[in-house]
Amino acid sequence: MAPRFPPVSAYDTSLRTRRTAAADLDGTLLASSSAFPYYLLIAFEAGSYLRALALLLVSPLLLVLYVGISEAAAIALLIFVTFAGLRARDVEAVARGVLPRHYAAGVRADTWEVFRGAGAERRLVVTASPAVMVGEFVREFLGAELAGTELETFAGGKRFTGRIKAVLVGKRKREVVEKLFAGGDLPDVGLGDRESDHDFMAICKEAYMVPTDKRAPRASPDSLLSRAIFHDGHLVRRPDPPQAFFALAYLPFGFVIALLRVFLNLPIPPHLVHHTYALMGIRLSVRGTPPPAPCPGTPGSLLVCNHRTALDPIILNIALGRPVTCVTYSVSKLSTAISPIPAVALTRDRTTDAARIAALLESGRDVVVCPEGMTCREPFLLRFSALFAELTDRIVPVALEAQQGTYYGSTARGWKFLDPYFYMNPRPGYEVTFLPALRPEETCGSGGRSAVDVANHVQRVIAKRLGYECTKLTRKDKYMKLAGNDGRVAPLAAPGSNGKKFP
Image (cartoon, one colour):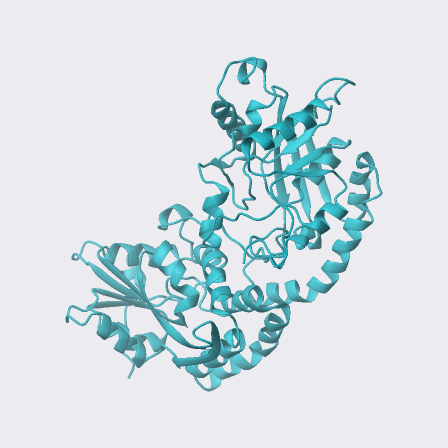
């Protein structure tokens, strides 16, 4: 007869001191007992649309195997369809840049409080999910060791075969816990949610069952050991089967719709585009008072905005209703060809770039600059480069917010020419807020303030309007997190670079 354990709600912190804890992941530390959405993210982001579609189509068979035959058999097939032939570095990149956000959003508050408190000295997560898939999240966000299913590789460890050495369920979980706690001092607390967890829970000094509750309160982001400020991937929502079916079924139609939204609006004057946007299902809200157009012979305004997608300058051009010029560190040949506004490439040489922007302003053009240097999807602002503050006193802060319900337009790992396909979303939207221009005393020239002070002031003004948090993080921090490099790319795709944002 299977051992019976009390529910996690019976855990009492006052009974005695606990130092170590071991817990299952799906259904225990995470509110959802299904790992399928995370496998689908691997299939889609590290594999392809077709692989993700195949996994979705085989999901009924996986359910039959899980219920009618065994958990191990279902997991083995799930892993094979997901991982067979994938490059290890692609899977690692998705595990590092895509999955943690979705995992972190699903952590149960009650079991995380028990796991963190009981495992103050040592925490262990024991899961049937592949170690390569969950390791980054478990170590960084939960501060725990990991025992997960190991996958076989070939080609010198560069690709996965799709086969497994052993699925970590039932007695295998018990064996790995005994091995990792070889000194004989077994975990003080064990947490699980299903019968296949009972074996390892039985050897813990205390053990508690976590009842199934998909609506259980989630742990606040601040309570975890890390925050998902930077993340990558194309899908906005966690792809549970209904959301996954819609995202994959709509994608071909969305791609065609995006092409129409882009190319049909190219010949339309900027002051009329917001009307065609409304007809095409694109929501554009403009708030505040735009700066007046520069008079002949006078310098243009420097429009300083936060960076949400690659389309920010184009949307700002439409909201302003007159031509603007954007400056950027990287732009693809296709983006340059179809852009309705001039895009001037910068060199990352401070003197050269300052001269280029100053010349544009002196010629009477309004110039758009995103001093974060990189998009950020979460409600945070990266550090603002101070270069813009040195160039002019005619500075207008602009707060931007993009609404993307199904697909993200810009990705760090994706093909650059696909960045504009924010338009694939069924009902994409943008909110543009023109904030008051800086007063003379708030600038470098007339006010005598330092460029760093001005940049920080503009960052705070925009953050306050959006309700975001200011950070000192930079584009380099983002690329080091998502890609393991500083994200430098040539202004235009170099021969042999394959057009991607990083190798």
